[in-house]
Image (cartoon, rainbow, N blue to C red; front, side, top):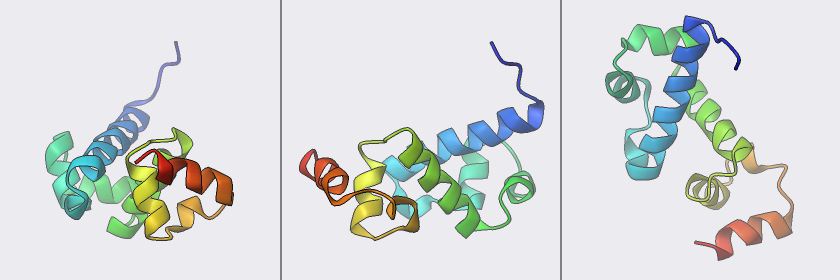
Length: 98
């Protein structure tokens, strides 16, 4: 088991909660809301992710990395840069499973 630093654990929690928020309330994917859900300050989120755009991009990249079946199709339909590397077949695979 890898021991993560407190900062790394916080960053991971922010990503995991952010991904859950994106699945359930995509309109609430912002630093202030996610900070409240994680139980940290807005400043803590800002420390790890410079702004809400950076936070959304990090959550999007995390969703693609873990092949999230809910968020990735949303990213595809909005042409988010995090899915730019997916092939046409990969995109169709995600969209046909929705």
